[in-house]
Length: 163
Length: 291
Image (cartoon, rainbow over all chains, first blue to last red; front, side, top):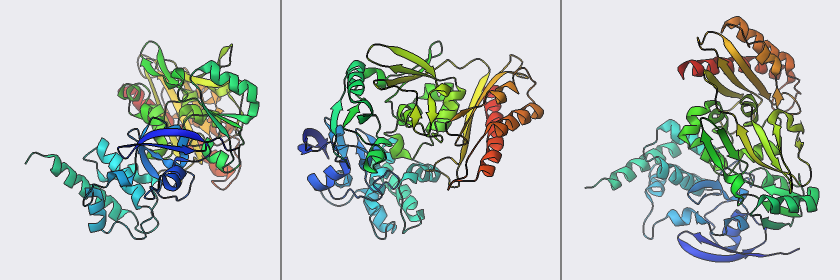
């Protein structure tokens, strides 16, 4: 029963059309159809956050969305957060603060942190930890990740200030 | 994942017609945070997945002090938490909704789905029962209203008939002098399933010294979320006192009929029913007096 469906969506600021089966998750579509392999598969059941993307401005786990559900929607992955040149402040601070080891959780953390800072540019440590509770990291112990997000938030606030 | 066809329904009657035709081989999709996992793991099967998010009635989220609160079955949690009017009027609901899963789950998951999944541990359910929530259920020709505490038959089983779908949850306006709270015990700080939980709504009289009424419901201590009318009866008309709260908490412990599983023992859950009921009542009273 291969009933492929044509889907059109804005992905990382680019309008894209693709065909997928209803049973394919957004995660599968992003990785296997659109080659956006920054999105990672961790648990594939909504617990780990490695597949986090921003869908119509809202943080979601792409393993819990069907590809067919995003028709007409806007999706941002870690590839869409990365500037054309250099790194996003979150990426820069993750490097500087050594907020990653194996790296598989990192894109999910970057995307989740981006969604947080879009909503709340000046979060407390508690708010960062609570927001990121759905992202699992088995290497770092989280402290460096939280530090990196707070540091990136500071950089981003400074960038917004008129000189 | 098993193959299925996907139909984005635009109206209640369109969705109801598919559900009537396909019976248990059709599944409603709203947030998908349960259904997609169930389909992937083979815990549910489906030939047809009916996406109900595009139906206007299921997306309605409205509150007025006279009409109360209507939560469309496909409204994601984040819309509820982000609404300051709702947060002020129904703080106990926000307690529950803001701890369902993590941020990314709340971006997608719906209370309609939480109710229809019918887990005994569903986090939104005890406090919704305490708030006297009613389920608005529609089929092709008929709409009926069911008190939430009568919606559940067992784990994963509800009173929904083939061809019926949940349209919305309706909560009456908060009564003057009322307060509410939801508490959950988990061994972590967040992102976990309740070992036991308690939702409470109290209504204090004009002097704020006596209970005019109260409703308590428990999670994860029975095959369904459990309404405990005995706890409310232990409070109604009594002075706000340690003795009355103690009696209500004991009634909750007596009503709980939990099992032992990987999350906790029956004995622990009995104890938690008592402790969480007492603390939820104290928090609800504090909020009622602050309002």
